[in-house]
Length: 487
Image (tube, rainbow, N blue to C red):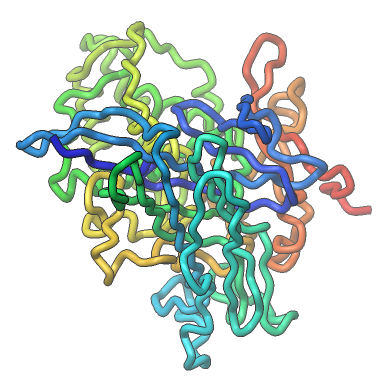
């Protein structure tokens, strides 16, 4: 039998932040917010998203797993590559936003007066490489001669790769260029990015082997509502692409616990980050009735399915497999497993899912973590895994180049409409003991694109707390020196 090496997660997600030293490992299991680690590698659950008033960066952590492949090509998981193996990691990040020639909004393409398009691509001269116990490796490039820090790579004590993104810094060359709209601002840059992650594995006494299935990393803006997941996630978008490619099939009958209940919970959670009254009726759900396939419960199922299909989000669309699941559920054709805990997935699949479940797939105009091309089945080699041999569509910077430049401008424009409240909240609760009277607008007093660039990292994060025996979601860690009402 042959050994096959894969990197997981297949697509990892890091996020920018302005804390000099504070960071955490992003979600690696369903329902987990992530973990913090000390210098010895001891992990503890994440509790705060800021330290000293500054936003911690979210790191993406990657691991190599070994599989045994039989003569028919079937794979059996052996486990994570152990410490006896020597693993050399390689990461190639790029930010191509300023050179993007497609159309996003009214003013695309970008920087049409600059003939040297390579001067607009922020990318290190060569991929960064690292092995265990080596110091962090810097990832920096230039835009029109201006150096831009995209992040760094390091390893944990077990030799796993940790990718950290930029500092949330956006600017222009030369400084002071105007910000005219939400998506396309010439001579501007930010420090999000994306690119391939690969590795070479050397087992004792054996020749080096390049991993057979490399991964990808996306560096995105912060998630300011980490306790609220999007109704449709990037995992759902990639899953639909895999169905379209013929690589997988949706389950013939949906599970209430795994496929239906999470959509209802996500729809209901929108009340914590937008207009409370629009979703207030979902705060008390009769799960027993909704999990009942009997005809008597069909009206209740149909009403709830309608809420999920039309949750009130701008340009919202469900992937086809989810719509089919909801239709089957309404018809009573589903597995009623409310009281049966879901079986645990193998660790590699948990890593793949958790990384993308916390990313928004609700709409793409242009998006938060990634854009429309994530719907394209042709960018994937296998489910959730990009195809680096498709050079026309898959290259460093391909997932983030369509995103708004800078991202803060889009964050400002999103105050009109209900776009991505699960990452960029619209309304928030400021007191756990005053729900909903403490509701207020999240971004106030920010009143323009430049204002958002200057102050977005001073805004608060929406997290879960217990109050009066109930779980509530409230804003924490907003800069106290940045009041909503200026005096």
